[in-house]
Image (cartoon, rainbow, N blue to C red; front, side, top):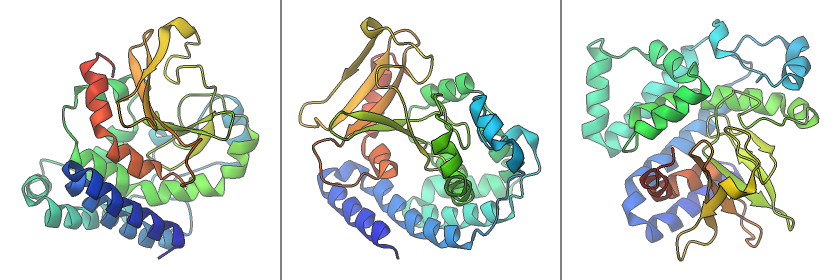
Length: 277
């Protein structure tokens, strides 16, 4: 187990004490992170058909490295990981996970189709889908997590090219997903967006909506919750979308935004109640 993973697991235990209502999800996350590391070590090559000679041009043109619509993705290992994830879910949440397994065994759900549907949505469809979800979607979480080790491999392998590309888009340069959470770092409060799908971080203009590109300050705002000042929800009244932000400027700890995303689900609920999606 790496030092970073040990630190994150210790943080999870601390968060469980402060947020007992998230204990089940945090328990699941902890076990998933251990399993993710195991599968990530096994990834030796990309399962995605990537034309390396086109990467620089794609990034300069605002296109992510991976094109899920192009097909040709080898889902053998992600599928194995998916069913291992379901084993974790069954132990922690037998009712919901049992229903998922029943539908998979009965042919009502197909892993390959679930992956295709999840990763070929447009930005607008993805945002609308999230807005319609009233509770945590365990199946979607497992589907997305099943691709995480393979996507992390790509993000790490081409991270240098991404850094040099001066990526200016509000969606992920590696896989094209829209971010759910970001962070403020360094004394000047530089803003970084985080892709919960592949783990990519990229610098983004602080006063700008990642979803519609709005830069009008009068229609950009944020709200916080008393007693949780390190968290804020940035909202855009032009497109009615939001993104959670963690302010690490005055904190010595290293952030794990996968964990912070789970620990701030109540902020998603508040944002939806305020009419943002």
